[in-house]
Length: 389
Ligand code: PMP
Image (cartoon, helix red, strand yellow):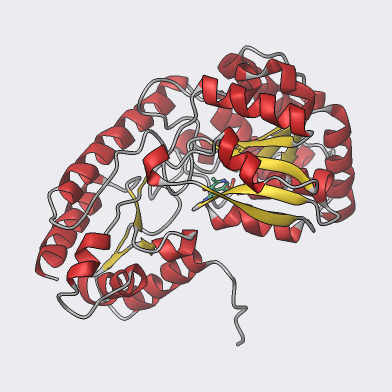
């Protein structure tokens, strides 16, 4: 059997962790970009009922089930105070698909898309797949890894078409304030650049509340495309449901593309997403509280290790510590974060993602959205191993 080599180092680490597990090794995975919990049972049950409904065994609308688009529009209103209807929403095969469709609508002819660097490689990949040209916008730890008007202006060219802003961001956990979003929107309007806002981690903001571009800069509504999905908030990464919300022209272009390619997102998974978004919001708030406690525990444990500098992320599911000082000591011949991550996986049994995967050598990304028992064991192993390395 031949396997396709994907240009996604994060999946490669998970695949190696699976191989080691298959050999009987005890591996704790903090490398995945997903919660390790199963999808909540009310959602799974709704999908089971949907399978038995013959109405859902046939073609549906390209834009997605009206009921799902309505709850998305209502949810966006609840979060941002801005009014939307079902016709402003397109259901997609996950947020990555929504990003691809958004970029295909505004930059398919090689137009430049400004993307935070270090950042999630999926943004870059979605841009390339859409025929756009990704351009790095340098962000650094001293500025909390946030894109600023100055950094955007430095990366801007007359070919710039869009900027992608994820808040909270992956892998850095940075969260944009309302003021920062408003300043970026003002800049984007001046420079005639689209704002593509990726709010996939919006349920997981631990300091203050999540600020949305839609709310922070209503004057930029005609230049803003918002993407989101159920993957992270409801532990539904495998179900593949997301959405795009934006101005009518963009939604029409993207819907035509969906109709010509995938026809529509499977109806069974749309029903599952409908159930997810309609769930009691206190369930999600409880998940966020649990993640916050895990974040705190993880940061505390890592900060106690000499040579590890771990910023406290304001949101998201990851910590992104620097191990540069540890590597500089070169105590066991390990000199890069890629080598360190490989050693942690092979010898210590903890899978983490090296910063190289995000354009940030010298750092490691660890997902804390894992069960308490696994997290405790992983932090114990990391403390012992990194203290001795
Ligand atoms: N945006 C960001 C910032 C992400 O980190 C991820 C997943 N790692 C996605 C989008 C993809 O989400 P989905 O599963 O909905 O395609």
